[in-house]
Image (spheres, rainbow, N blue to C red):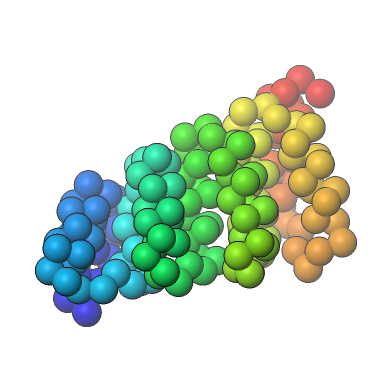
Length: 155
């Protein structure tokens, strides 16, 4: 519980390096990593655009059989968006379904915004159409991402 609180504090201040050090201390001290601590560390990475570290931590969670959830994936997808890594964002969005992690409009919008930042309007539209029959609520952020992708991509 103490580690979770400390890492959550790092997340609020976007101190991803310190959050990752604390996770390392957990592992070194034979304290099991958990979803709350790892998700908080990933969120700290997200806030600073440290997408490589966020992806690495997600991979480590999978390797160590730490449960991932929608919040975890959302933070990693957002980190990829900040890093302009649209291919990773789309892969992660699709991977959620494969791993039986619930996808929602927040994760859809994050993936769409990642495409928009890079002008990948074709991929944004394909994802939007692919998800048209899904349970996703399309909101202002959804349409903003689609329009942004088309504008940035010159469509």
